[in-house]
Amino acid sequence: MLEEFKKFALRGNVVDLAVGVIIGAAFGAIVNSLVQDVIMPIIGAVTGGLDFSNYYIPLSSKVQTGMPYAEAKKVGAVIGYGQFLTLAVNFTIIAFVLFMVIRAMNVLKSREEAKPKPVAEVPADVKLLGEIRDLLAERRV
Image (cartoon, rainbow, N blue to C red):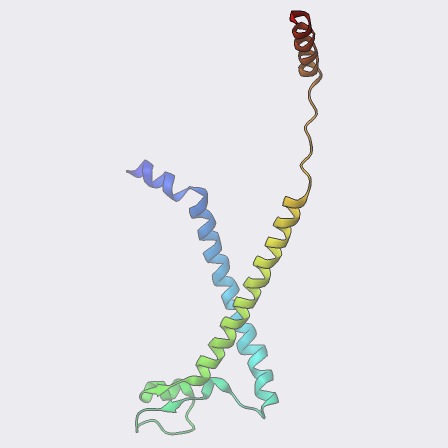
């Protein structure tokens, strides 16, 4: 059973998947920082200093308006639509970047497929054997 598990764990697809997940997590952190630290502040500045991450609708009477979202969540139930907007922008950026990467890979793949395959030159000894075969075939006729 241990040998079977080693075969499974070290198979190329599993290792590739693990690398993809790790890179995906790191990429997600970068995109998250890009959205929260660069894009959303710019959007906030354009819209008059609005901070989307603190937009919420209180569902509990315990939550006072004007509280930061994190504090409001601790006090009572809230709908954090600002946080949702931030995550939606996050998703859109990740989806667009992945689309561009897949598109670039498909273009490279189609270029590679369009290249003519080099014709392998027949070795001299094989060519000579072919000539001998043809001569022997002519003598039999």
